[in-house]
Image 1: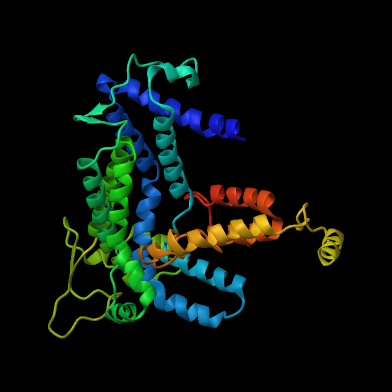
Image 2: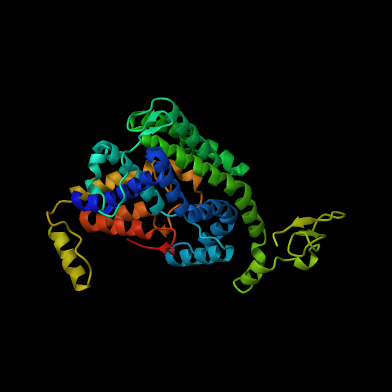
Amino acid sequence: MKAFLKAAIYTPLFNILIFLVWLMPNHSLGLAIIAITLIMRFIFLPSSLKQGVSQEKLRLLQPRLKELQEKHKGDKSAQSKAMMDLYKQAGTSPWGACLPMIVQLVVLILLYRVFQIGLSTSRFDLLYSWMPRPDFINTSFFGIDLSKPDLWVLPILAALAQFGQSFLALPKKDPTQKKAEADNPMMAATNQMMYFFPIITLFIARKLPAALAVYWVTTSLFMILQQLYINKVLKPRARAHMANLDSISPDNINAIKTVPAGADKMIAGSNKIVGPVEDNKPAAKGVSVTIRRKK
Amino acid sequence: MAKDNKRDIVRAKQGGARTTSRFGSRLPRTIVVLLIRGYQKTLSPDHGYFRRYYPGGYCRYQPTCSEYGAASVDKYGVVRGGLRSIWRILRCNPWSRGGLDLP
């Protein structure tokens, strides 16, 4: 069993790591770890972005979902079918996926095992025969030895990045929800987790070899950037899309995608629409509505 | 144990799968289910402390992967239930359709 796991999972990933070490200037292990992290993150980037946006879309869909649940109470399959139709109408696939989490965990465990077994050129018996071998592996990364635990710089960076990422990923709360959360003790615990988890990260990072802290910092910084992009760019787009939800049906959803409503009112050369647009709520008297739409 | 055997016979007649343990003990299943519950209460993005980051739920399928795992292990035993759970986790990726997937 152990041999199977080793052959199927450990060896390929180890090969990828050593290949990246060979690629990187000065055979630097730190850069190779950063590279493998970024590769993994880019593979899962589309689904992460979709999932970050779906958070917002679901928040806006919540009242409709509730009424669907009431309508099909007790019949689970009809309920889920109706919900799937609603999701399709809204153009969102509502959930994340379990696999990216598992893959990250596996890579983390791999890194841990690599340092447990010991990282030196004599361990290259695991490499495939066609793999180029680096002459040495440079485990020093900006003055930090990656095979030993780093006590201060990397753990603190990891904890800060973790906190930043949790903070940015928080869904916006409606005022009613805020009150409900203050009352519910369980939700208060999840609130505290935002502050608590970075401290756990700090202590764990101090114990483990610094390579894992490098991995953690890279992944957290990437997710911070990802979350900023979601918050500033994708979420407002989603909100605009959801505002038109009632006018979208399976027949005209393709039309909506290509020609934004009110396109004929667009000022030539820009994406500004001036004046009241039919599909939006009528503006108050005397107000001219200026809407910028993506062409 | 006699009751379980009867259930197995009936299931076999209906083309179902064997769900009793070869060794007659449900202890391994209970331990694994307890571990899964512990994960659900803490780390799970669907049921645990990180739940608030995903107000619409996290897992692609309904029931969630951890719930599927617990129910699978409870029903089919550690080895078979475990393998089914691993297959389910592999299926629960960004490129699958999601939806209803009962244990």
